[in-house]
Image (cartoon, rainbow over all chains, first blue to last red; front, side):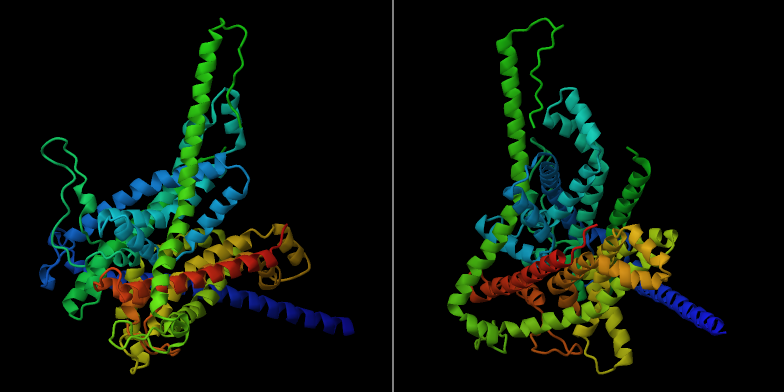
Amino acid sequence: MAYAKNLEEIRKLIASHKRWDLFFACIGVVALMIGVLTFVALFADMAIKGVPRLEWDFFTSFPSRRAGQAGILSAWVGSTLVMLTTAFFAVPLGVAAGLYLEEYAPKNWVTDIIEINITNLAGVPSIVYGLLALGLFVYQFGFGQSILSAGLTLALLILPVVIVATREAIRSIPQGIREGAYALGATQWQVCKDHIVPYSSAGILTGVIIGMARAIGETAPIITIGALTFIAFLPPSPIKAEPPFVSFEWLTSPFTVMPIQMFNWTSRPEAAFLVNAAAAGFVLVLMTLAMNGLAIYIRYRLRKRIKW
Amino acid sequence: MSAVPGLASSPMPSVDAGARLKQRRSRVLRERGIESVLFLAALVSVFTTVGIVYVLVKESVVFFTHVPLWDFLTDTQWTPLFDDAHFGIMVLLSGTLTSSLVALAIAIPLGTIIAIYLSEFAPFSVREIAKPFLELLGGVPTIVYGYFALLFVTPILQWFYPELPGFNILSAGIVMGIMIIPYVSSISEDAMRAVPMSLREGSYAMGATRYQTATRVVVPAAFSGIASAYILGISRAVGETMILAVAAGMQPNLTFNPLEPAATITAYIVQVALGDLPHGSIGYQTIFAAGLTLMVMTLFFNIAGHVLRKRYREAY
């Protein structure tokens, strides 16, 4: 009899514990939904307010004092040029650094310092990079408040992302590939350039895209170096009619970028400018979503395809 | 690793040994050259840190010759651009701390619950969809979150609490917390997934439920990783700029009440950078002193995280 009663109690206990399980699973779904719903609300809010403003004119007009005529021409051109500069510096530097740390670096204190540095830099607030650029690039090196300064700043900012992605991609290549190449008489550099880099390129690309998606939305460091918020002209064209056909004057030109344009419109009291801000924000969100989505897709494909 | 094969394979007709030696030397030189170039690229990160410290300290030293450190730390007013200038960093720190606390009160519980759910409860298909979605949430530009906090969340909060001012720490903090959730949840989840299956199986074999296994076996075993996720969340919150600059107002205000507007360290830097202060003026130097404070804070959290990780590391 005592045994049966005990069994009853045990069953109750088990049932109550199982209820906890279910309860927690529900809480988990709710927590997840809070994140998802916020994202949906944010996206829908921007879309509802901003999409009616997204006509062709919006992309081909300069900012204006009249909200209805203002556009994002100088902003998206500026963003594109800054991104080009950022990629130009961040990709080779990041890949080279990742390659060095994975394939060349001896185990000593110098390597340790470099690794600790990369970890710490990933945690430094972006505005501190802005201060670095203001003190160093803008005044010390005399680059001024130019596309070059902004591109360099963002390159330093996303460098840890590119390095970490490169290292992870390289680390997943089996040792046998290196040994096979060495056995055929390849030098270390030949192994790197003919095998390691090509095989890790998809992983590196993912890291680069994620880094660029982060850079394109960064506002604080670019405001800190003193980018202007009202630019009604374009940087000089990189392509010239007369030889040598290519010009780098645009590197030293003043500029504005998409997030700064949006910030400028958001901080105005008139409701018409807030609509512009929503439209610019919608474009910005779409761009970062597209880039992040592309990165996720490449990673997904990669995981499926590669079987060493 | 010397990968240069200097072997003279016997069936080959013997080439001039001197020429081969020359070729080999040039190859070794080229390899060394390439290695040095790659090394320099890796050193850029060290130069960046040195550059940050150099710039912040250089400008701050000038600042602290004008303003005693004691006043900087204890003054209760922050009016650097007025005639009667006061430089009390506490005012900005209070804004930073309050907004970070609001954000963390959202991000840490929700991030942890999501991580436990995704790692221990969720079916495979849910995880495969939820993880990229969370990543996208972390990829939205912060200026967009700022707009969202100011023009979506604040009106909703005002509906519940009509006296809430248009600029306030609360809505900025809430949105910031939601922005940080993916950072906390993804690193925590990675840490939990790294806990070996045998521990879970042991726990299930003893008759524990999923919830018991998650909270009493998996979370303690993954604690060092979860702690670093929290630390990362804290550094994000302290260094976040645009959400606060847009939605929390930029008036310095010594308060710990999230219902008031206040400026944070980061928002102040943005505010000064938007105006045009002459290079070398005291106002220009204040942003470097403020930046140095921010840097010291994040450094402190990083070190704390390192200590926590070392202390609670479980090796399997």
